[in-house]
Amino acid sequence: MPTKWINGKKLIDIKTWGKHLLFVFANGTVRVHLGLFGDVLVNERKKVNRSFFLEFAKGEINGYVVRAEKLKSSLEELYDWRIDILHEEFDPAHVKTLLKKQAGKTIADVLMDQQLFSGVGNIIRNEALYRAGIHPLSITGKIPAAKINRLIKEVVAHSQLFYQQLKTTGNPEEFGVYQQEYAADGSQVTMKILPKSKRKIFFSEHRQQLYQ
DNA sequence: GTGAATGTTAACAG
DNA sequence: CCTGTTAACATTCA
Image 1: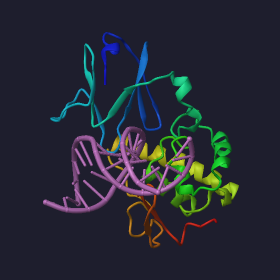
Image 2: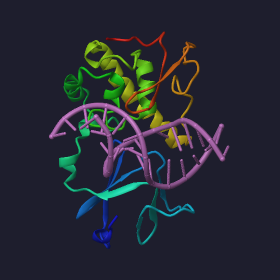
Image 3: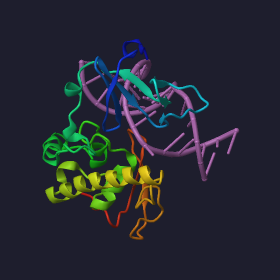
């Protein structure tokens, strides 16, 4: 990534939007995405080459196996914080209006759509659906409103929990359904590989209702 | 050594 | 042109 434009500029702010990590400078913003294997370390280095770094008078930020690029437009233009599941501006009502346009898709696909639920990944998808009692292959438009409300609540609650666990212990606690043989309630877990994304979904036939 | 894993996107096929 | 599929990226752990 060309970094000349940052040289000598002051880092004003660090923001996040879903899985995007944003370093804000007066003359532009750098977006860093960790993908599957990425790491960002502060005042620490690994042996392998950094794919991104910021060096300050005191201290440095190092990115490994990350994609970094300068944003082509302003933050306001690119990011709507009403759909960022960990942001204070997260707006369930707004998300629900967006959901109406996705009525025909499965809820598993919709949950991973970063333009609806920015920040949801495969673990949170599986865990939130289990907690909400919704089968991942349910058709979004067929799910009762109360269940959708519950799901949105669980998405936020689980991502907050996940974040706290990673922050304190560095590891997620035991999952309720993800990569489990038996779910938290003791019921048998089924695993399926989604056709398009090839990602694995885990669910309990017993506890998660299929709406179709 | 093998395979799979918290993700996204470019390239390609039809 | 639109939709869907595959490959690529490159690391760590079991």
